[in-house]
Image (cartoon, rainbow, N blue to C red; front, top):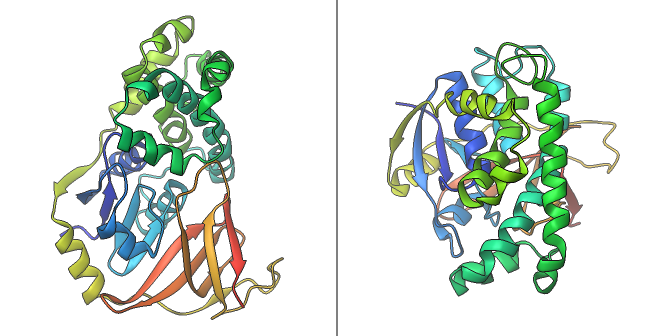
Length: 306
């Protein structure tokens, strides 16, 4: 039986990142479908408040954000590598560029599709994307199109020498980070075909990344995931960087939340790990016992509560 459980919904471009990672590595995994909008009680009870997707679960360890998922998959299953060119620093640095790329596609989708969305779905997105002025989207859509096109032009330029993937002949995390935005904008926004029409290297590359697949997927009920969280025990050994700039200490009560363009919920817990690249907190729960929730450090804010 696979150790990996992914809590997700397929329409999410961020889910597509996680699935392509699993596909590249040829891993078996189990799928728990989450709702696209709140409430998400079956997910939030595991994370402690974070409601974004995807979330990876391995036993009583909960991994938040696609970059954290990538790091843990690479640690546990190093071959085939997400970094065929031995360039993990560059691939992870592309996370923030990928956020900007996504932001352009998001603004386009909100402006073009938002007026036709179900009111409950629209209200949920307004609560998540608190930085967006939904009354001014019409004024921003052409700028968003230009930004989407600018990022796509960078990808096309990287592929212009005939390489199959962004960093060479083999696929890696850099391709997966970039893939989600063309994937969802082409599917949902017909104007994308015109916007990206001159970039002749993109369609073949997109097809090659899509062909990575999603590994060996088995759908399960959330009760199975909850049972595994309840039955297994996470590693609670502290791993704290003595030079941490926030002077974080093992056992300190902290709150962790995304520090970007969306409100995906915050998680409180006792600090277990604090490094340059990872934050992990211990949650003692009535339903599951001990859980450890792992976050990337990049793009997440840590607030001491003591």
